[in-house]
Image 1 (cartoon, helix red, strand yellow):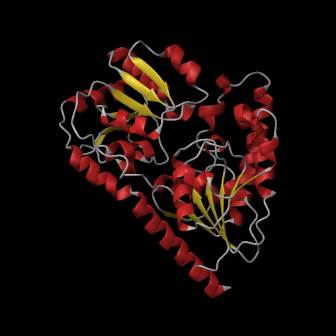
Image 2: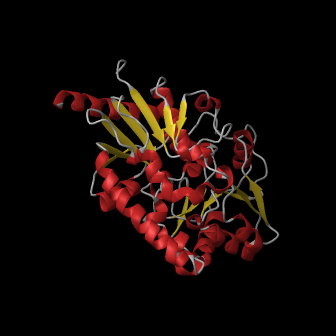
Length: 372
């Protein structure tokens, strides 16, 4: 595919989460491809991404973007449709919001790696916009906007030639909402960087690594740990920070965003990673397991694909503090083998991802060229 002109599209570049790890790997597979994104906060990405040609939309020039970029959601579909991608033979989008809605060349191939259909428009709508969470004015403004986003999301899915999903659960959502099938390729985890500590120390705390948004159910974990009185460290930031701080007891510590080296040390010193909500995939679960740390997770969604119940962690079955209590009580009685945990995590390495996704794209490109 040396002579194929390729472009990469990503929703936005504001931090280093699972989606950006996928983009980084795609950029290694296609080193000459420019990156199209709605907006980019310089310095927010690893050097390999920052050095790429990054082309942003008109949203990059909007006032107060860094602080209030979520307010511009109604403009996202328009912004992504204004990208001129007519000169590219192959477009690979990495999408959890609108990136899959680009308008490709009629003679080009569009492959979209889906982290999730727009969460706040579909399966997580009530977590974000239930009646009790909306102001009086928002009750009249937000539902029509989200309805319009759903309509656009479905119609724009027809612009994708092939879908790749990050998990079986996301593939089921693609089938449900878009009526399309999707191949599953799990996202990459840097299992070389995330590894067990050289020496085992005292494990005196549990840890959550997550964006602080409603569907992550961090409040459930806080309620459980407040009652237990056990130490819990929470890594991450997001719009729920103030609310969660108000509900947290003295044993719950908020650490905010952490660098990669600091995060690795926190994993290595933890007794367990706690995942209290349903994840699309849950990259933190694999990072923790790469460090030899077991995971206590809600037993739905991506956790079912990343955690082996009883071997690399435990599941709890209901989104209630008592259900989490029961899993934590059971957890105390199990002696987990950190090397067995790490061995499982190696199946999600960056090399495995790059090999699988590159092979998938090559197959789809070959079929496309043979039939056009």
